[in-house]
Image (tube, rainbow, N blue to C red; front, side):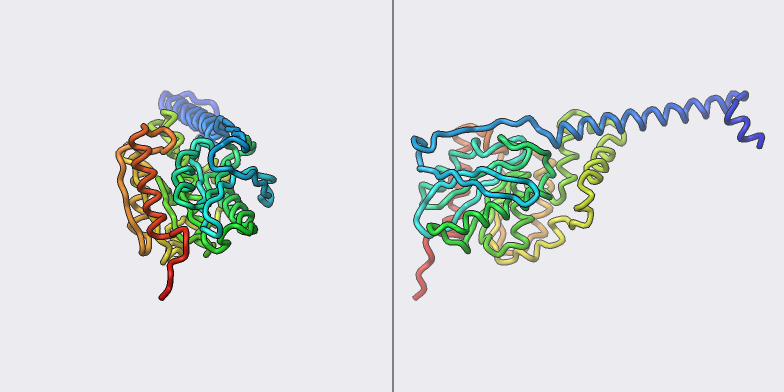
Length: 312
Protein backbone atom coordinates (compact mmCIF):
# COMPACT_ATOMS: atom_id res chain seq x y z
CA UNK A 1 0.00 0.00 0.00
CA UNK A 2 2.84 2.39 0.86
CA UNK A 3 4.47 1.74 -2.52
CA UNK A 4 1.29 2.68 -4.40
CA UNK A 5 0.91 5.78 -2.25
CA UNK A 6 4.52 6.79 -2.93
CA UNK A 7 4.00 6.34 -6.70
CA UNK A 8 0.83 8.42 -6.55
CA UNK A 9 2.24 11.11 -4.29
CA UNK A 10 6.03 10.87 -4.67
CA UNK A 11 8.08 12.37 -1.85
CA UNK A 12 11.47 10.72 -2.35
CA UNK A 13 13.87 11.99 -5.01
CA UNK A 14 14.26 8.66 -6.78
CA UNK A 15 10.49 8.20 -6.96
CA UNK A 16 10.13 11.67 -8.46
CA UNK A 17 12.87 10.86 -10.97
CA UNK A 18 11.22 7.57 -11.89
CA UNK A 19 7.85 9.27 -12.44
CA UNK A 20 9.47 12.00 -14.53
CA UNK A 21 11.19 9.42 -16.72
CA UNK A 22 7.95 7.48 -17.03
CA UNK A 23 6.10 10.62 -18.12
CA UNK A 24 8.87 11.43 -20.60
CA UNK A 25 8.74 7.92 -22.06
CA UNK A 26 4.96 8.16 -22.41
CA UNK A 27 5.29 11.52 -24.18
CA UNK A 28 7.95 10.15 -26.56
CA UNK A 29 5.79 7.14 -27.46
CA UNK A 30 2.74 9.36 -27.96
CA UNK A 31 4.65 11.88 -30.07
CA UNK A 32 6.27 9.12 -32.13
CA UNK A 33 2.92 7.44 -32.79
CA UNK A 34 1.30 10.73 -33.82
CA UNK A 35 4.20 11.66 -36.11
CA UNK A 36 4.32 8.17 -37.61
CA UNK A 37 0.58 8.33 -38.29
CA UNK A 38 0.95 11.68 -40.06
CA UNK A 39 3.91 10.46 -42.13
CA UNK A 40 2.06 7.25 -43.02
CA UNK A 41 -0.92 9.30 -44.24
CA UNK A 42 1.40 11.28 -46.51
CA UNK A 43 3.02 8.07 -47.73
CA UNK A 44 -0.19 6.20 -48.65
CA UNK A 45 -1.78 9.29 -50.24
CA UNK A 46 0.95 10.59 -52.54
CA UNK A 47 0.49 13.73 -54.57
CA UNK A 48 -1.25 12.83 -57.79
CA UNK A 49 -0.69 14.05 -61.32
CA UNK A 50 -2.70 13.06 -64.35
CA UNK A 51 -1.52 12.88 -67.96
CA UNK A 52 -4.02 13.32 -70.76
CA UNK A 53 -3.23 12.60 -74.39
CA UNK A 54 -5.13 13.17 -77.59
CA UNK A 55 -6.12 9.73 -78.81
CA UNK A 56 -6.54 11.02 -82.35
CA UNK A 57 -3.08 12.56 -82.71
CA UNK A 58 -0.84 10.57 -80.38
CA UNK A 59 1.65 8.25 -82.14
CA UNK A 60 0.72 4.60 -81.82
CA UNK A 61 -3.03 5.18 -82.20
CA UNK A 62 -4.03 4.09 -78.67
CA UNK A 63 -7.51 3.01 -77.67
CA UNK A 64 -9.08 4.20 -74.44
CA UNK A 65 -10.08 1.18 -72.37
CA UNK A 66 -12.24 1.32 -69.25
CA UNK A 67 -12.27 -1.66 -66.93
CA UNK A 68 -13.69 -2.37 -63.48
CA UNK A 69 -11.72 -3.51 -60.44
CA UNK A 70 -13.97 -5.28 -57.91
CA UNK A 71 -14.22 -3.17 -54.79
CA UNK A 72 -12.21 -0.31 -56.26
CA UNK A 73 -14.31 0.95 -59.14
CA UNK A 74 -13.40 1.87 -62.69
CA UNK A 75 -9.96 2.40 -64.18
CA UNK A 76 -9.04 4.06 -67.46
CA UNK A 77 -6.25 2.50 -69.51
CA UNK A 78 -4.50 3.10 -72.80
CA UNK A 79 -4.13 0.18 -75.22
CA UNK A 80 -1.46 0.62 -77.89
CA UNK A 81 -1.95 -1.95 -80.68
CA UNK A 82 0.93 -3.92 -82.11
CA UNK A 83 0.95 -6.95 -84.36
CA UNK A 84 -2.42 -8.66 -84.45
CA UNK A 85 -2.55 -11.60 -82.01
CA UNK A 86 0.79 -10.61 -80.49
CA UNK A 87 1.29 -10.76 -76.72
CA UNK A 88 0.51 -7.71 -74.60
CA UNK A 89 3.04 -6.05 -72.31
CA UNK A 90 1.56 -4.36 -69.23
CA UNK A 91 3.62 -1.41 -68.00
CA UNK A 92 3.04 -0.97 -64.27
CA UNK A 93 4.27 2.37 -62.97
CA UNK A 94 5.98 2.88 -59.65
CA UNK A 95 5.07 4.70 -56.46
CA UNK A 96 4.49 8.45 -56.94
CA UNK A 97 4.51 7.98 -60.72
CA UNK A 98 1.85 7.57 -63.42
CA UNK A 99 1.24 5.97 -66.80
CA UNK A 100 2.14 9.17 -68.62
CA UNK A 101 5.77 8.79 -67.56
CA UNK A 102 6.05 5.46 -69.41
CA UNK A 103 5.15 6.57 -72.91
CA UNK A 104 8.67 6.35 -74.34
CA UNK A 105 9.04 2.79 -73.02
CA UNK A 106 5.64 2.04 -74.51
CA UNK A 107 6.76 3.38 -77.89
CA UNK A 108 9.92 1.25 -77.84
CA UNK A 109 7.87 -1.89 -77.26
CA UNK A 110 5.16 -1.00 -79.76
CA UNK A 111 7.83 -0.30 -82.39
CA UNK A 112 8.75 -3.98 -82.04
CA UNK A 113 5.14 -5.05 -82.70
CA UNK A 114 4.01 -5.64 -79.12
CA UNK A 115 0.60 -4.65 -77.84
CA UNK A 116 1.10 -2.43 -74.80
CA UNK A 117 -1.33 -1.53 -72.01
CA UNK A 118 -0.82 1.09 -69.31
CA UNK A 119 -3.05 2.46 -66.55
CA UNK A 120 -2.80 4.28 -63.22
CA UNK A 121 -3.02 2.51 -59.87
CA UNK A 122 -5.17 3.69 -56.97
CA UNK A 123 -3.95 6.96 -55.41
CA UNK A 124 -2.03 7.75 -58.61
CA UNK A 125 -2.89 9.69 -61.73
CA UNK A 126 -6.53 10.72 -61.65
CA UNK A 127 -7.50 7.94 -59.23
CA UNK A 128 -8.41 8.59 -55.61
CA UNK A 129 -7.95 6.30 -52.64
CA UNK A 130 -4.78 5.17 -50.91
CA UNK A 131 -1.97 2.91 -51.98
CA UNK A 132 -1.53 -0.47 -50.32
CA UNK A 133 1.88 -0.93 -51.97
CA UNK A 134 0.73 -3.96 -53.89
CA UNK A 135 -1.95 -5.77 -51.89
CA UNK A 136 -4.96 -4.34 -53.75
CA UNK A 137 -2.90 -3.25 -56.74
CA UNK A 138 -2.50 -6.91 -57.70
CA UNK A 139 -6.29 -6.98 -58.14
CA UNK A 140 -5.95 -4.02 -60.51
CA UNK A 141 -3.38 -5.93 -62.56
CA UNK A 142 -5.68 -8.95 -62.78
CA UNK A 143 -8.65 -6.82 -63.85
CA UNK A 144 -6.50 -5.13 -66.51
CA UNK A 145 -5.36 -8.48 -67.92
CA UNK A 146 -8.93 -9.78 -67.89
CA UNK A 147 -10.12 -6.72 -69.83
CA UNK A 148 -7.36 -6.86 -72.46
CA UNK A 149 -7.77 -10.63 -72.88
CA UNK A 150 -11.33 -10.12 -74.17
CA UNK A 151 -10.07 -8.25 -77.25
CA UNK A 152 -9.98 -10.09 -80.58
CA UNK A 153 -6.66 -8.56 -81.64
CA UNK A 154 -4.41 -9.94 -78.88
CA UNK A 155 -3.16 -13.31 -77.74
CA UNK A 156 -5.30 -13.84 -74.60
CA UNK A 157 -2.86 -16.35 -73.13
CA UNK A 158 0.42 -14.43 -73.48
CA UNK A 159 1.14 -11.37 -71.36
CA UNK A 160 4.36 -9.74 -70.24
CA UNK A 161 4.89 -7.56 -67.18
CA UNK A 162 7.22 -4.63 -66.67
CA UNK A 163 6.97 -3.02 -63.24
CA UNK A 164 8.86 -0.59 -61.06
CA UNK A 165 8.77 -0.96 -57.22
CA UNK A 166 4.99 -0.78 -56.53
CA UNK A 167 4.20 -2.03 -60.04
CA UNK A 168 6.84 -4.76 -59.81
CA UNK A 169 5.41 -6.09 -56.54
CA UNK A 170 1.83 -6.03 -57.87
CA UNK A 171 2.87 -7.72 -61.11
CA UNK A 172 4.82 -10.50 -59.39
CA UNK A 173 2.06 -11.02 -56.84
CA UNK A 174 -0.43 -11.54 -59.69
CA UNK A 175 1.99 -13.71 -61.68
CA UNK A 176 2.23 -16.20 -58.83
CA UNK A 177 -1.39 -17.18 -59.54
CA UNK A 178 -1.88 -16.16 -63.19
CA UNK A 179 -0.45 -18.46 -65.86
CA UNK A 180 -1.18 -15.93 -68.62
CA UNK A 181 1.90 -13.98 -67.54
CA UNK A 182 4.79 -15.47 -69.54
CA UNK A 183 7.69 -13.06 -68.93
CA UNK A 184 8.52 -10.32 -66.42
CA UNK A 185 10.89 -7.42 -65.91
CA UNK A 186 10.90 -6.49 -62.21
CA UNK A 187 12.70 -3.25 -61.41
CA UNK A 188 13.35 -2.53 -57.71
CA UNK A 189 10.85 -5.12 -56.50
CA UNK A 190 10.41 -5.78 -52.78
CA UNK A 191 9.17 -8.78 -50.80
CA UNK A 192 6.48 -7.23 -48.58
CA UNK A 193 4.51 -3.94 -48.81
CA UNK A 194 5.59 -2.84 -45.31
CA UNK A 195 9.13 -2.60 -46.67
CA UNK A 196 8.03 0.30 -48.87
CA UNK A 197 6.64 2.04 -45.79
CA UNK A 198 10.12 1.82 -44.25
CA UNK A 199 11.60 3.30 -47.43
CA UNK A 200 9.00 6.09 -47.32
CA UNK A 201 9.79 6.99 -43.70
CA UNK A 202 13.52 7.07 -44.45
CA UNK A 203 13.00 9.26 -47.51
CA UNK A 204 11.09 11.70 -45.29
CA UNK A 205 14.23 11.99 -43.16
CA UNK A 206 12.75 10.32 -40.08
CA UNK A 207 14.35 6.90 -40.25
CA UNK A 208 16.79 7.73 -37.47
CA UNK A 209 14.14 8.46 -34.85
CA UNK A 210 13.58 5.60 -32.38
CA UNK A 211 10.50 3.49 -33.09
CA UNK A 212 9.39 5.73 -36.01
CA UNK A 213 9.77 3.08 -38.70
CA UNK A 214 8.28 0.34 -36.55
CA UNK A 215 5.32 2.51 -35.57
CA UNK A 216 4.60 3.43 -39.20
CA UNK A 217 4.88 -0.22 -40.30
CA UNK A 218 2.52 -1.39 -37.56
CA UNK A 219 0.00 1.32 -38.46
CA UNK A 220 0.18 0.30 -42.12
CA UNK A 221 -0.34 -3.36 -41.24
CA UNK A 222 -3.33 -2.43 -39.07
CA UNK A 223 -4.88 -0.40 -41.92
CA UNK A 224 -4.44 -3.44 -44.19
CA UNK A 225 -5.30 -6.06 -41.60
CA UNK A 226 -7.42 -7.99 -44.12
CA UNK A 227 -4.09 -8.97 -45.72
CA UNK A 228 -2.38 -10.03 -42.48
CA UNK A 229 -2.25 -13.62 -43.71
CA UNK A 230 -0.74 -12.67 -47.06
CA UNK A 231 2.69 -14.31 -47.30
CA UNK A 232 5.75 -12.47 -48.62
CA UNK A 233 6.37 -12.95 -52.32
CA UNK A 234 9.48 -15.01 -51.64
CA UNK A 235 7.42 -17.76 -50.04
CA UNK A 236 5.64 -18.61 -53.30
CA UNK A 237 8.29 -17.84 -55.92
CA UNK A 238 8.24 -21.48 -57.04
CA UNK A 239 4.88 -20.66 -58.67
CA UNK A 240 6.70 -18.65 -61.36
CA UNK A 241 9.21 -21.38 -62.18
CA UNK A 242 9.55 -21.43 -65.95
CA UNK A 243 8.58 -17.76 -66.35
CA UNK A 244 11.64 -15.83 -67.60
CA UNK A 245 12.25 -12.94 -65.21
CA UNK A 246 14.72 -10.07 -65.31
CA UNK A 247 15.46 -8.50 -61.92
CA UNK A 248 16.83 -4.94 -62.14
CA UNK A 249 18.69 -3.31 -59.26
CA UNK A 250 19.68 0.36 -59.14
CA UNK A 251 23.02 1.27 -57.55
CA UNK A 252 21.66 4.66 -56.46
CA UNK A 253 18.77 3.04 -54.58
CA UNK A 254 20.58 0.63 -52.23
CA UNK A 255 17.59 -0.11 -50.00
CA UNK A 256 15.36 -1.41 -52.80
CA UNK A 257 18.37 -2.78 -54.64
CA UNK A 258 19.18 -5.01 -51.67
CA UNK A 259 15.58 -6.24 -51.44
CA UNK A 260 15.54 -7.00 -55.16
CA UNK A 261 18.82 -8.88 -54.88
CA UNK A 262 17.40 -11.04 -52.10
CA UNK A 263 14.37 -11.96 -54.23
CA UNK A 264 16.59 -12.70 -57.23
CA UNK A 265 18.69 -15.13 -55.19
CA UNK A 266 15.54 -16.98 -54.09
CA UNK A 267 13.87 -16.93 -57.52
CA UNK A 268 13.57 -20.04 -59.69
CA UNK A 269 15.02 -20.34 -63.17
CA UNK A 270 14.98 -18.91 -65.75
CA UNK A 271 16.13 -15.66 -64.16
CA UNK A 272 18.47 -12.81 -65.03
CA UNK A 273 19.95 -9.97 -63.02
CA UNK A 274 20.93 -6.48 -64.13
CA UNK A 275 22.54 -3.77 -62.02
CA UNK A 276 22.20 -0.24 -63.39
CA UNK A 277 23.80 2.97 -62.17
CA UNK A 278 20.66 5.09 -61.98
CA UNK A 279 17.18 3.87 -61.16
CA UNK A 280 13.64 5.18 -61.76
CA UNK A 281 12.99 5.11 -65.49
CA UNK A 282 10.83 8.25 -65.39
CA UNK A 283 13.72 10.44 -64.19
CA UNK A 284 16.58 8.93 -66.19
CA UNK A 285 18.73 11.00 -68.52
CA UNK A 286 18.05 10.41 -72.22
CA UNK A 287 21.08 8.18 -72.83
CA UNK A 288 20.34 6.05 -69.77
CA UNK A 289 16.70 5.83 -70.80
CA UNK A 290 17.53 4.58 -74.30
CA UNK A 291 19.91 1.95 -72.93
CA UNK A 292 17.26 0.85 -70.46
CA UNK A 293 14.59 0.61 -73.16
CA UNK A 294 16.91 -1.48 -75.34
CA UNK A 295 17.57 -3.88 -72.45
CA UNK A 296 13.86 -4.32 -71.72
CA UNK A 297 12.88 -4.74 -75.38
CA UNK A 298 15.69 -7.25 -75.99
CA UNK A 299 14.56 -9.31 -73.00
CA UNK A 300 10.98 -9.54 -74.24
CA UNK A 301 12.04 -10.25 -77.84
CA UNK A 302 14.07 -13.21 -76.59
CA UNK A 303 11.58 -14.63 -74.10
CA UNK A 304 8.17 -13.48 -75.37
CA UNK A 305 8.45 -12.85 -79.13
CA UNK A 306 5.60 -11.04 -80.90
CA UNK A 307 4.99 -14.05 -83.10
CA UNK A 308 4.76 -17.68 -82.03
CA UNK A 309 7.96 -19.55 -82.83
CA UNK A 310 7.63 -21.90 -85.78
CA UNK A 311 7.64 -25.55 -84.77
CA UNK A 312 9.21 -27.86 -87.37
